[in-house]
Amino acid sequence: MSEPDSNVDSTPSRFGRLLFATGLAVLAVRNLTNLEGRIAYADAKGVPFANNLVPAASGLLLGGSVGIGLWRLPKLSAGSVIAFFAGVTPVMHDFWNVDSESRGEELTSFLQNLALIGAAVAFFKRAREN
Image (cartoon, rainbow, N blue to C red; front, side):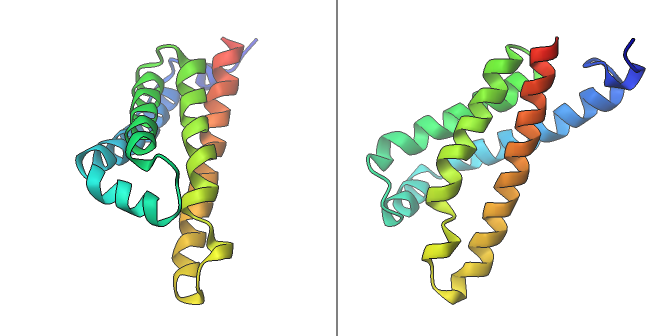
């Protein structure tokens, strides 16, 4: 027998999904509305085919966030978010390769992304259980 608030449709679960999904959707939309800047940054980080990968990765994040928020195709959606952060985090926030002036900011972004991966993994696990 499961506890009431462990149900995917419980208010806390729905609220958590919406908070997570909204934050990620805003990040994705910001990427998509500033593609030139995001592509330039990715180019500076040495990302190959940045002009193709940045919009594709941002679309992956947007689709995954909407899917988690609406709990539609939740395994695919959570997997999309995991794939986005697993690909982006070590390349774009490589704190170990930057100068000491940038290291703190990159480390913070790296750790924030790790936390988001953790949340996406938890959503993926929840989707597998249902």
